[in-house]
Image (cartoon, rainbow, N blue to C red; front, top):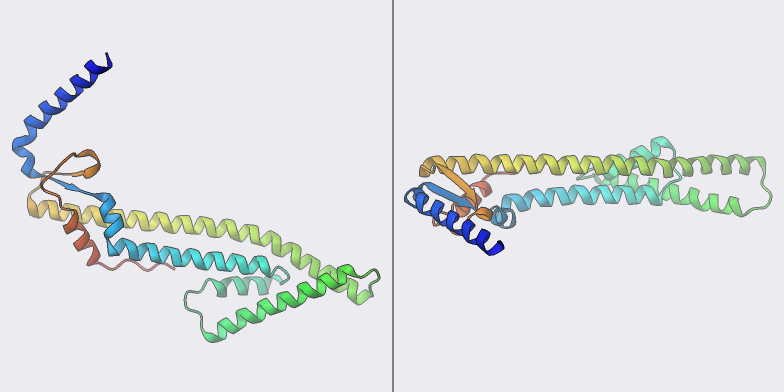
Length: 211
């Protein structure tokens, strides 16, 4: 039964191929995998997204290592770390905030080891402990926000790239008077492969900048 089914399928496929052979010159094919792997446009998009992801990771790591900051300091540090091209003054501000957090963390560790505390020390212990707790909680929120933002940017760039490719394919198909363009995934062989032309025209465009 299985052999018969396979034979029937192959005969049907060959029959369809024979019927469409006369019009084969009006069909085109693109290799989507080649476009994604070889296109400089796609590579530039990927580099942009990787740079954004790297900044996100760096920002989260800095927040994780610097929990003993108040809300304003934490927000300032976070926003500065997400900047693509920070100024020298901004980089110095980042380092100052990180140093402040480290000093407070060291002081907090010392206070926790003391058996007896003065009123001033108790106040400092309570204040720093609260900062640390809020910093840990804020880190989880920030991580979720950045993950959603990154996924959104990936989705937007993917859709934008697919749209550009479709527009280019439609343009080439019109110029070559192609009635249909197939993906190479569903075609065994096609003489009229327009993949290289699609890549050439795609690479002539500039990808949108994403921050």
